[in-house]
Image (cartoon, rainbow, N blue to C red):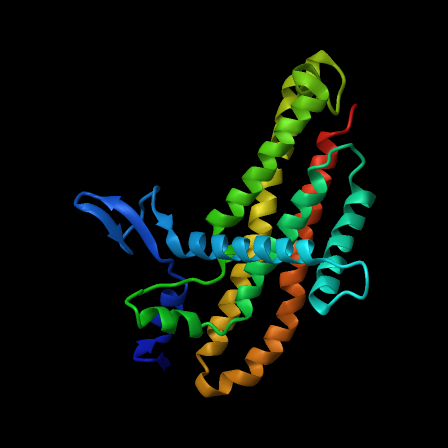
Length: 268
């Protein structure tokens, strides 16, 4: 079997797919030995997500404060294009009256895109740098962690439930779950199962679609890295193609969020 840095191919792949974890053990906090522990924290995913979120917040705030009405700079132009793109999609898709949707959609798109773009960093660079300071494992793409994607989708799900009840009331939301698609009291159990499955499927599909695509892309980069010095042309080709994937996945996550929240604001 091929080796990479003294590791077999299998060990190399497993190492790069392992998160930096911490959990509470019998003798206190334990690092990297948390298999099977439900309360383990993936520290690398959390830290990198927060850092990217702070970069997004600081950068957009800086541009907003220094924005000019004259000829804008390249950074201001790029951010204006992103804001305009998101705003247009919200106007075309969301038909309710809620000032939260546009900033929420912008945050989702830029934040998810930032996390996805970490996939374009060569797989050995940051883990190798971390190993020099004693960090054994480091996954640098937060969206390849199902905990991150599921947490984001649950946030959207809670907003869907909140606005469904706020706009339609408890009675309206209950009737939506029990009296559709068949408006008859005898079909309530069937309607509830059907609508309940459709409701629960929203956060599951939202999270697993993003996770699955990004995990597969990261695995491809790891497999390409096994080629050693011959990886460069293939890495470049896959990275160019992957730019489309990372952007598309951020866009899909944003659009589904808008669609779900638009449905939550609809009266039936």
